[in-house]
Structures are given as structure tokens and as C-alpha cells.
Length: 197
Ligand SMILES: [Zn+2]
Image (tube, rainbow, N blue to C red; front, side, top):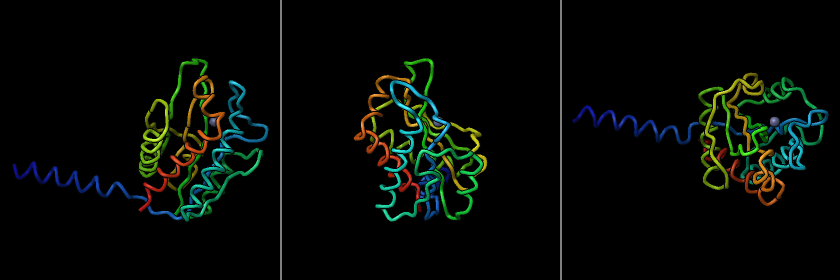
């Protein structure tokens, strides 16, 4: 019995430590696509525009909480994926959050999904997805490991969020609404803040 108690205690302590595990002062926000790269286009929405709008809302939400925020783009410009990572890597004590929206020919497909590559990226991803799942409508597709270039080339904890499916009519209608995009940005901001030590 004592052995079991110690194991449970260690697991419990481990969970407490994992709640506020990341040390950072800067958030690099990466609005997906831009310029000649529009991303996906469905139901009257173009991904690059929705990404930028959500990213700018996220910037305001994080700045309001006193965090330093760096944007990989603030306008409709094309930026190479490697250049996005290179910009982010200039900052130490930082995390990287890339904002995207998904699409599928299977139009019933819907939901939010957060991608990570490293263990610390996974902690950030879990914290963000938890807040998104609690605060927003939509299916939780979970966390996934992936080797997207912005995740492999960045040196800090990094995530790529597929916020919703623009190919799904219900989700596209939500995303077309600025009120929903504000809730989305605030949920992501809450997740970023909850991961901070
Ligand atoms: Zn995208």
C-alpha cells in the first residue's frame, strides 16, 4: 500500500508541476498564409484573411495581459515559412503560435485541432486546446504531433492551431462572425497564459 501511495504522490506532484511549466515573456504570433498564398477558400471565406484577423485579435488580447507580442505578418503579405521561423528564432524566452483554418473535401468534417512537435510544444498545445474546448462551440479533434515546417524550424515551444473547418458550413458561418473570432482569440490567449510559469 505504501508503494502505491508513493507512486500516486509522484504522479500527483508531476501533474502540479506540469500546469505552469513554460517560462516565456514573448509570444510570436504567426498568421498563416498571406499575399499570393491564400490558403484554403470555402463558403466565401479566404483562410489568409481569417488567420490575420484572428491573429491581430490574439495580439491585442495578449498585449492586454502584459505579454510582449511579435507578429510574423500584420498585413496581406507573402512570407516564406523558413523566414517566419527565422524571425521567431531571434527571440529567446518565447513561444510560437501559428493560426490556421482547415478544409476538407469531406464537408461534414469539422472541429478544432492543435499540432505540436516538441514535448514543450505539446504542453502549450494542451493548454490552448483545453481553453478552446471549454470556451468555444465545435468538435475537439485533439492534439497531434506533426512536422510542419514552422514547428520543426522554430527553436522554442511551438504550436499550429487549425481553429475550425472553413469547408464546413456551420463552422464557416461561425468564423465569418467577428464576435466568434474574438472569442476564439481570447480562448487561445487564455490557453497561452495558462501554460506560463
Ligand atoms: Zn493553413
